[in-house]
Length: 140
Image 1 (cartoon, rainbow, N blue to C red):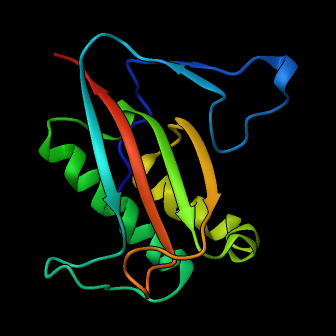
Image 2 (image 1 turned 90 degrees about the horizontal axis):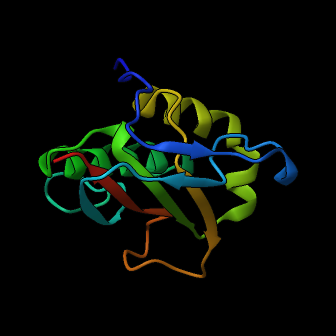
């Protein structure tokens, strides 16, 4: 699957005083447009059931689902201004950052919105290891 260009109409802000932003941006100033709130996406298939097992595979499919919702709202990866990652396995996420990063770049290119990782005890679907919630600003 080819990634889309890293074009973003938004300004990514990464002040040197905060240290390097690796795989995310410290702040994003959105361009004018419509705000699109992306509901939590897990690694579910079209039938709504969990369709992937491992953490990396679940992250990849949850990101694909988030982008499907964003495209349906008229946007694309470069319009994403923030992404929250919720996981029940923070240590597993840390140890898989290389693989997760490759999955991310396949779908997002080198566009890195403001991001945060949250460790949670469980998600709504008992088998889900990761859930993504995003915010995008799509030009009018």
